[in-house]
Each structure stands twice: as C-alpha cells, then as structure tokens.
Length: 437
Image (cartoon, rainbow, N blue to C red):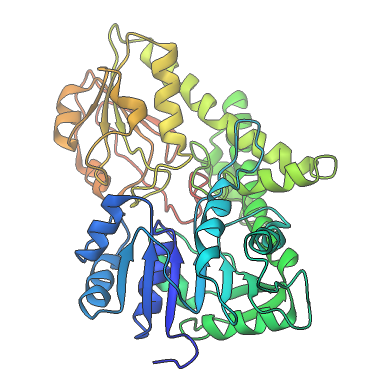
C-alpha cells in the first residue's frame, strides 16, 4: 500500500470515472467511488458495471471482491479527490459547469490539510482556478493555491483524460498524461499519483496550459474530420467517389485525409472545440467553421436517406447503430441519434426499427413515439424495406453475408455507399472514421 495515498475518492462513476477508479484500485489502493445514480452504486457494489467497455467488468468485479473499491452516494474523507463529472454545454454553446460545481460543493466539507484535488473533466480554460476559488469560499479555514502559491494547505491540479472508448483500460495505463498544477508543487503531487498506474510519460505544466491542451487535441481532430466530411459533400455534388478520391490523395507522402462519416459524436470532439470558440470567438474562426461543417453532416445524411425513401410508399427503415461510435453504448452527441430524430420529425409516415446491441431499451427521446422500436438484427432484416448502417458495431459484420431482398434498399453510411439487390457490402476500418470521437 502506498503510504501517501491510502484512500482516493473518485467523484462521478461514468465512462471515465469508473475505469479510472478500477485501475487505481488494482494497485491495491482503497478507492471510494461517488455517484448520484442509485443504480450505478448498486451495480458497482455488486461487482457489475453500468456501461459497456471491454474487460472493465472483470476488473471491477476483482477489485470490488478484494475490498479495494466500493461505491456510495456520499463523499467520504480521503487523501485525493478526482473529479470526473460531465461538462456539457448549454443551448447557446455556453459551457455548463454545474456538475463540476456540484462536485466541488460535495467534497468541501470533508477536505483537510494536505489533501489533493484533481479535476479530470474536460473543461474551459480557467476552470481549475475556479475550483480553487469555490473551495476557498466554502472552507475559509483552509489555504488554497490561488491564495498562497508558496504554501497552500490543499493542492489542486488538472489532468484531462485522453482515452478512446473501447480501449479505455489500456490507454489509461499506456497513454501519456498532461498534469497541470496551480503551482509546481501541486503538479508534482498530482504526478506522484498518476505515476502509480501510468506507464506513459507524466508531463507537468500549469493548469491553464493543461486545460487548453485537452481542448486543442480535440479541436485538431475536429478540424481534420471536418475536412473529410466537407470533401464527401463536395464529391456528392460533383458525382465523384469520395473514397476513391481520398485513397488516391493519401498516396501523397505528406497527405493523410481521414475517412468521412455520418457526423461527429461523443462527449469530447463534438463538445470541446465549442469551449475554445466561447472563450475566444473572434480568434477561433477555423475551429468554429469545422464545428459547423460537422454539425451539418447529419442533415446531409438525412437528405440522402429521404432521396432513397421516395421510392417507398411506407418506408420502414432499419437503423443499424445508435451509439456515437462502434462497440460502445455511449449515445452522447451521437450523429445516429440526431439522424433518426430528424427523419422522424420531418417525415411522419416513416417507421423505424432500431438495432443497437449495446443497449437494453431506447433512450427517453424515443419512448413517446410508437414509430420507434428496438429490434434484433434478424427482425430488422425481415421487416424493413430500407436498411441504413450508421455505426460499424462488430455485431453488424454479419451483414457482409446477407443477401438482401429485391424490395430492400441498403445504404451504408460507414462507407457512404448505396447498395441494392444483393450487392456485396464493403466495411471500412473505423479507426479513423469521421463518425468517431
């Protein structure tokens, strides 16, 4: 047992918090996870997981059974507090920091001298300093870094996650981490924690630079994805095969164009660039333009579906995939969800058979409309007259062997090709697909 970090508290047990808690607990350090969702707490304490992530179920079961991880609704005293709560944006793209503030409010009563607070949630520049200021307003008896740089009684740092769903456990350990302290001492103390389980490099800087680093990484990807998505729309207008175009262009030694897709989803790439635009609207012209291109792509897909559906008197559309990327149950900012909802809003005579193997029930936005039905692959293929592939889940690879009926249309938006009447299906690698985040 590490003598410094005897007990660590992880606030928020979602797609990042739970894997992080489990990985730390695997180092035989006691970890208490805090979440407001009763089902999440019950499942974790039973050694189960509320999300889909490869190998996480076995890890959680092991550390829970060994007594190194348990979940609760209430924050307990600890040496370290990791905040891993959502940071969405509001309707006008203003960052919503209410979850961060609520987490800070919850840990303030149990803070003591020598504790370390680390914000991992992707946040606008300046959020870590706001955390320090909020804690100071709640605990006037303690000294925080913004009050005394040389000798704070509570250390505060920022360390963003940098993982891809589907590979979280491996990347939590292998990827480099950027650790931004409010002071060099804060950064050093946070680095000591991450070095317990991170095999990659732990690089230290100040908090604002670390915050901007995370936003920059996702904005960079968003801009590159937008280029591919814009190319696909241009090629549609000019009747050019965008896949052939990209394949040929990428033979240039200094060109590496990504693959287009139905849009950009997830809590990172679809959200984080907006934090930069909100902070510096006049200077972030390219980043804003890229976000607008990617936001428009689902609408472009809707029009392509409608064009094919015109041949059908009553379209029954089997939508394969609802998550924002392959082999996950994460629906946050999913372009597939947006595409289906837009179609339903615009065309009242459409019916939808949704195939999503990673969820047990449809999300709330679908439950009030009887035109939506969650079905198996077999039922979808049997009952639909139009089949739309939106996400390349591994379960859908069986479609390669399917012989479609004469009355069925198949549109593959993983590769943006229309296939009818028994034509073979080509699946692109999804590692660099623009639908990923």
